[in-house]
Length: 420
Image (cartoon, rainbow, N blue to C red; front, top):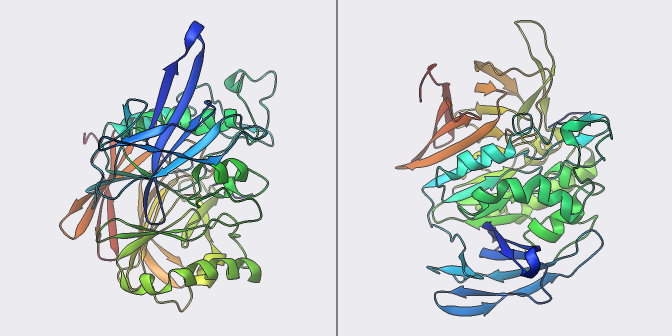
């Protein structure tokens, strides 16, 4: 966040040495998993599921900035194999045993703030995705903010020279689909809408390609609240792209409340996690004060008001990004834990620090045990009986932190230096 904050890539050779690209992935939508593909072909392809050829349906035809076709197919529950144009698609593991979480992955080009997209250390999303894919997750959760290339790269800036910009196919390909390719090939995904996919920014690409609705929506639409049933654990996906952080305007609170109302009974009775781009309970660095800093302010007031007096008894954890660091906030059993993993590639807050800080914090009226740091990397959760155990690994695949989620308690601690 900057406060001012599935499947696979298939490359098919064509005649004469030209290259056409068909990109495909598997993602969760309401009711199950869906295969999607972007193809330059004139018709949608077939997916061979357990030996049976099933035609994909057209989701969206060519449009300004998007010169391909978007096709989709609801995958039958219990399918064992699926192949698109001879290549395997990753299928759901239910219940999943290993879940990969990260977000805020794009390369920032906006308003005089130009990240060096051509430098793999300055914009390391491709490396993070490659390292994460090697962990063989059963499921990938992206907590939002895919599209960052909003402004053209300045002519004299070699760090981002040659990059596309604007909400179009080329920018989404450069910002997300190309660097994510190995991880898209590894597992199905759950996509969360970020504020960078909001109206006036990347909403066109979001609604066309990644939103879970059966057909592309258009602004000022919101992404509908989504429940992903993983078998004993539900993921409740909320659209907080338009939820102001510092204030709680009545209209925005009502929008969030309507999404919560749609999930009301499940949030009280069926164990699960809320996935929403903006943390319900988060702290963002705004100033550095020597060895004492950073100084932080709380967010998100809109969602905090929306969840007041709601029965979230079955919600263990809220999973978010938006703030470009790792943060765990554990309130015991009084409210769900808050996990923030906005570490996928975009630049962090200037006032933040890579130092691992094991502290306590007061937010929205409650004290929380907290572990936080600013690093690029990914967070991996493995099922351990009724608990989940997690590790955060950085850009060099070094272990930075360990965590355990037990009921609503998310306890994290820094790894000892030199731990592999």
